Image (cartoon, rainbow, N blue to C red):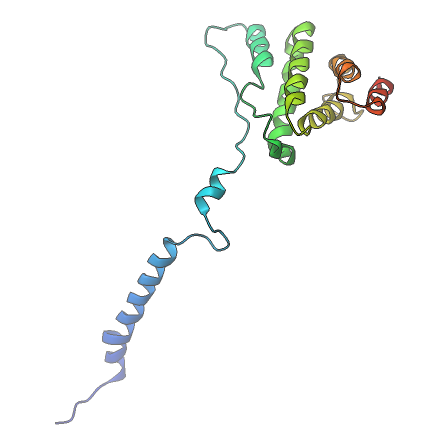
Length: 181
């Protein structure tokens, strides 16, 4: 007895199901694996620097002036000054800084000056000495540079005074800050 095997039936009943099964197995295997070039995907995602976390203004503060003063005084409370990787993330740090500068005119001058000094104190306390010059440069860029849309001499004066009186800056930096003013 001779069997007549026709090629289309072999394709439909044997080769296609086997190919489909292998494809499904391959998909499941690749979906559960780690990305190429990553030895431990969980560790790499845990070490990423988070974005800037804004403080919450208490609901009891209703007046815009009171809300602005609270925000200026507590703006940097959630910022991790010891994480120097922020200096390489201008989309996080510079945007937060520009937003901070935009709030300053909505407060009294004394409160703004105190807030600027507090920010520089926090930056100065960072152990590697990276954050303080970084924030001094941001102040210069946003408050002193002639083409800055946020330029404001009144808010740059406390920065210059701080630099001149600090114990970190060398004489050349102090002279540069003084000559800028």
